[in-house]
Length: 222
Image (cartoon, rainbow, N blue to C red):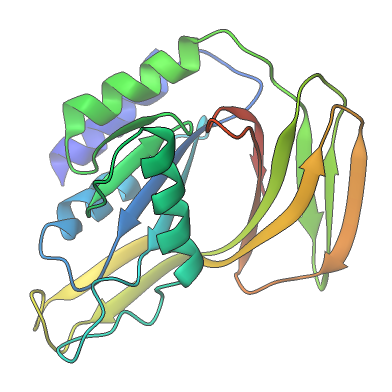
C-alpha cells in the first residue's frame, strides 16, 4: 500500500495543471484473481484530481462459482470497442485504457504511470464539458471541431465486497469508482449542447466526449 500512496504523490507532483482530467478505464472483474492489484492501483490514482479513474466490470468472468453483481454488458461492449480500435482480438482483465488510446495491463505500475504522463503532456483539443445534478442530471458540452460521441457514466465511489467463490473466493475486495450505468447521449458535431435527464444508476456522474478512434476530447465528473 505504501508503494501506491507514493505513486499517487509522484503523479500529483509531476502532472501539469490541465483543462481536463486524464481518463483511466480499468476493465476488471471480481472473479479475476489478477485484478485486485489493479484495483489497488486505481484507488491510489483516484487521489489525484488530474485523473478520472473508472472501473468497468465485465461480464465474461461470470459463472457458477461467482457472478460479479457490478458487471455490465455495456462494460464488455466498451472493452470490445477498444480492442477494435487497437486492431486486436485480445480482451483480458485487468486491462487499463488511458485516455481512450493506450491499452496495457492494469496492474503494470510503470506502464500506467508512463501512459498517464504522456496523455497529460499531449497536445490536443480540450472541449469543455460539465455534469451536475441531483435527481435530474445536466450535461453540457462546449463548442469545438470534429465529430464525437457523448457518454454519461454513473459510478459509485467505493464498495467492499466479500467474495464467496471463484478465483477470489474468501477474499474481501475493495473497489473504487465502480461504473453502474453507461449511457450514449448521442453525437456531437462541434456545436455546444446541453442535456437534462433523470439521474441514472450511480452515486456520481462522469461525462466523456470521445471520437470513434478512442480519442478523448473532453471529460469531467461530479
